[in-house]
Length: 121
Image (cartoon, rainbow, N blue to C red):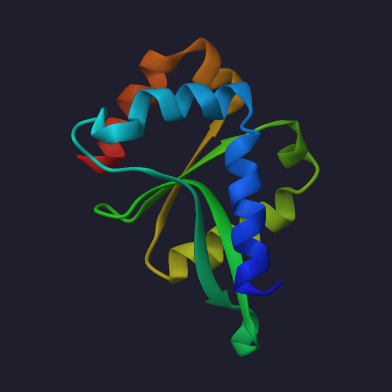
């Protein structure tokens, strides 16, 4: 995909967030969480095995702390290897990746908040 295509896709994802993504965004947008700025559906450029450029879309990203937050739904049970590879690439690039399940965000925000605070403090 070209950058223009991935940008269009990221914008579409912002329009159709899952309930867990909506809740997370409500809690962190506008520097509501510890004064940190979070971006949603943030595009990260990388090169796969030194070949042409490619892109990842992070669910949420705190540039100040270089922390990516992924909210995992059911689809992630079928793409475990891809998620693991993606996380390894991002970590080699200097990002820190934290994952939460949809259920955690929806049903136990206090736990999510506590863990997130540890990552961005």
